[in-house]
Image (cartoon, rainbow, N blue to C red; front, side, top):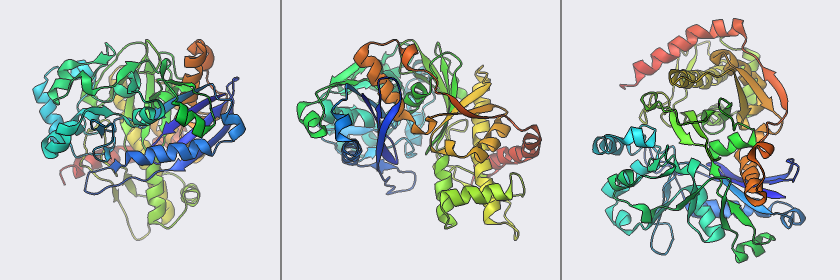
Length: 479
């Protein structure tokens, strides 16, 4: 039995995986995000630990006792600043925080080779600009900082007593030399840090610590090994077998991601494409990232006093492309391809005949159009995608899938267990770390439950709306 824990933005999920690869049990515990100022997004690291313990202890005790290893996945980029006593000095600054735009420009000016080393453009979502912001605006806290950990690795510290991270998560800090899979002294120095502030590095499928005896006793387990683990997207990829060059997935969670595994580093920083290490040795990956995906459905449903299932039903009853309504899904700014933390969402084209159903349909279309922009950026980097394995909470809506497939002109494959997400990949990494199994034998693709091919007629109807969507971003960005 192998335990996978995913420290997400909206909650922590724990999954138990049997030796033959089947999910035996799962549990979750909710988290909330604090937004004390415009552009800010923070969480209390203590909440991650409390939610982790709640999720793990919600699993059956008899199954927990059989766990052989634990794997961790987590939301990427979060800056957890620890003092000399390893306690957080302030709330963690999250991946969708946009306050450090000016610091990004300063970092690129200070390190002309930044994009070549990091494989990415400096974005406010990454960890390094957050530390540059703290250095400028909270100098006492910066001076007291002795360690910087990513969210899952802070949880690992409490689980194991060790400061360790994996390559895939660390690649999102903007401190890693992504091609060399090692910390860059030059990038660290640009934010006033050095290697002493960083955790040690392991591959995601290697052992990265051992469960502390007191934690193991509380959880009803032995003091088992903890795998290096992965950032949430890389873990999600391992969970659905996206581990070979050219394999690709679409994640529809709080954020939306198109993820492509590559056998070497293929960067396109000019198009705001993310190029990171994968969580298995000798692999990298590209991502187009959209900060608001399925969360747009939650937001729209709340605004219309509907549940998300009712929102989806209203959209499907209305049909796609049935009105002039247009939705720009930039509730937290945007990454690929715009790298714009300041842009915000908008409804356009509203009229007296606009209905909840039309507005719901526009939300689904708007998220699909944002992914079409992201796919275009990946294609500009030389990537060709014929199909996408769909994971995340948004994978539950086949109607939305029809819109996305048609907007992207790519087949979507819905997999058995695809909604389990990164926790499944974390459990698989735990299995590899504990048993030494060949990753290819563990990281297999689940059976395809349903495939949705692009609908040429719908794609033709959506094309003018996609063009309006792209023109709308250019029109609103200055205001």
